[in-house]
Amino acid sequence: MQATPPRTLVELFTGFLAIGARSFGGVLPWAYRTMVEERRWLTQADFAETIGLCQFLPGPNIGNASIVLGKRWFGVAGSIVAFLGLMALPFVWVIALGALYLEWASHPTVRAVVTAVGATGAGLFIGTALKLGRAIVRKPAALVLVAGCFLSVGVGRLSMLIVLPLGAALGVLFARRGWL
Amino acid sequence: MILGDIALTFGVLSLIAFGGMPAVMPEMQRLVVEVKGWTTAPEFVQLFAIAQAAPGPNVLIVSLIGWRAAGLAGALIALLAVCAPAAVLSWWIADLWERFRHSPWRVAIQKAIAPLVVGLTLSGGYVLCTPATPDWRLWLIAAASAGASLALKTNPLWILAAGGTLGGLLLSG
Image (cartoon, rainbow over all chains, first blue to last red; front, top):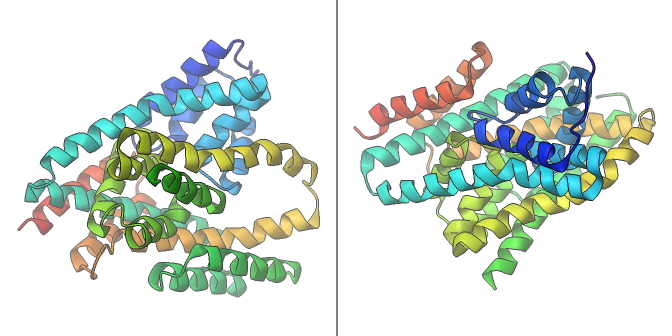
């Protein structure tokens, strides 16, 4: 399949606007559909590689993808335009929904449902962690790091500013010894 | 200056958010609820729920927190602060990372970060379904949702809707 990058900033903006506006239930599938299937800006392999990099980088994955892709096609202007296109409508939706919720937050059933949606979202995170964990489950050193992170940050509520550097140092040490 | 405080808090979170937003949720909750007091633990979960249910990147929870702390300006500042530092880093690293594709250090760093992301994402899930004292009903909902997300290939929105319905029955009784 031949990929043709967007030709103008307007095209870039409307593309990312279309991703943000429709991304019910997660942005990634919509980003794929818009950029690979509908507009054919990227090949499947390109898309996978860019997302892989952005998942590794700190910060919101899809926000980073808009920066990296905007830069590739139009430089700084492209990064800014892609980011604004991606965030503009979701920002309006989320604030509107937040305002609507606060009107109703004193209603016990509404609060119960929204709290449960939060717990469901928490479960989705746990599902994601288990999916990611499948690749490393046979390595004891990796499980030590997973358990250490979970006990210190999740249960112990220690700051990530302490745990992350320690964990990263240990992880690199383990990796250099071939344990990961 | 609350806006400056918002910018600084979310700016720091941006740079430590390896693995994206899920991995940094425990730290975000700790900072905005326990350290800054911009929202309460139960409300944090509710704002998270709204950000999950609304279309768009889940990073938008920071806008809801900024909005609760300092109105519309807080919402905008929080979003920019959580994205900008990481964006600058991405801008730089995208090319550099490519150049070191076969470096043993790059491989070691990638391997080191993978289990940390798993542990932190797990922590995020745990913290969000344990807003105050442990509640078996919220744990049950979270466990069912995790199971459903692994077993079914459906849009997560349906799982959120099912979880909300289940919670309406379990929690308001």
